[in-house]
Length: 131
Image (cartoon, rainbow, N blue to C red):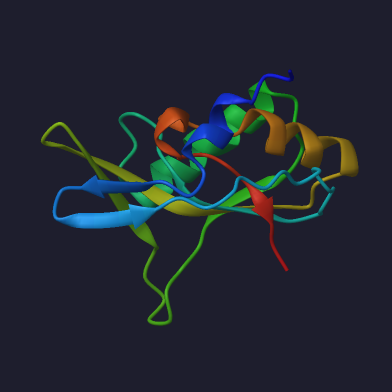
């Protein structure tokens, strides 16, 4: 008998989170595809809560990973930086929706594999192709 992967044991289950109920679907696996532009809904970098310093820190992390690309903070319709927050144990973590452009195919795959910033266990710093 073949062992069932742990993630499939949760498929179809209903969870109660606070006053909300969430039903989990079947996990989907996607192959990473290179893209010249990648976007993350939220990237957090400790100590960088303003857009200008955040972009500098993000660019420094890209350089450390040997990824040549240009990081920027996405803006809302009014032209304000898309600041996102995450609450963990009463603490508010500030991050930004982030776009990285001018990526080579290799750098694009590397960024999707490694991510950027912290709190990746909480869903931060994951990049997907941006059109």
